[in-house]
Length: 383
Image (cartoon, rainbow, N blue to C red):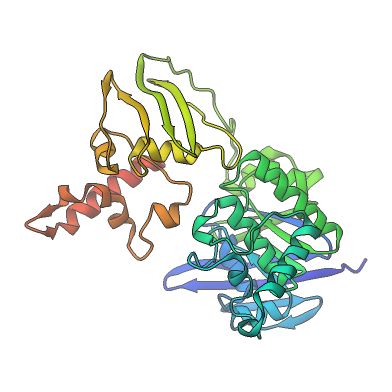
């Protein structure tokens, strides 16, 4: 029986210097299908999608859209074929408003009246049940709001093939449910969707078929209802896994950290909790509940109005993140690209940035010592 494919990618290869990111891989997506794309980090998933969206050009292979062979030399070529990519790391201009981000780079956008644009965005938002303020700056948005804006952006450009790259990675359960609803509505309207994820929950909720990549190679494609978790994991990692999450018995020790009555007007009020040795404490809440702000208050990124932060029985005076770090408190931010990393720097420089004084003598950085320490830490994390 002839298949009705929206996307056919065959024998695609892409090399960056000595690194082969894709090695003769393939992917076929049917019209009106949500197709899951799974694989470990570095398997080649995002590279393939960057070629489908025109960011990269394949070294070898063919791409067909609705049966027609295409050649993309830029994202504009991909957009013309009604392909939209929602990147894991958002492609938004922080100093611009939502509506300015929606039309940036679009023909005639410079002449479009703000009110007309706001009405068009509201029309899209109402149709798909999305909530976005057209005049709100990206810099003031939460991660969930930024993702909503990315979805509106590709829909505004008329996309009927959507690529979603790790869209649930930084979302709360409630935000994930909202994303599922939107994805299902788009599918029911005939859109073809590639959903890249590490989460089986995403796949089972949305996808009919799943493709697995491993070590830059295509491993296979299966119907979701015909393959088990165990088989999928073995395909992804290349070996049998006896336990996905082995139970670890850890004794809960004495209290090591306590927050008492932490408050910041307009953000959070009277927050108290304690943490014991050997314990993982979860902090949950809806978007806007103040989770991030509490953590930033503890870390000294934003000043709290009142309350205490107590470590090993000693009340800390944290006025700056450096005070928290000296006390042994670390912070992994929600938006690691914007708040946690310097993207133009290498791994070693980013790893040692918070302890740079240890590798500096008379204002000169000892790069060798920096690299050695970074390698030690990276190896430790891998274990």
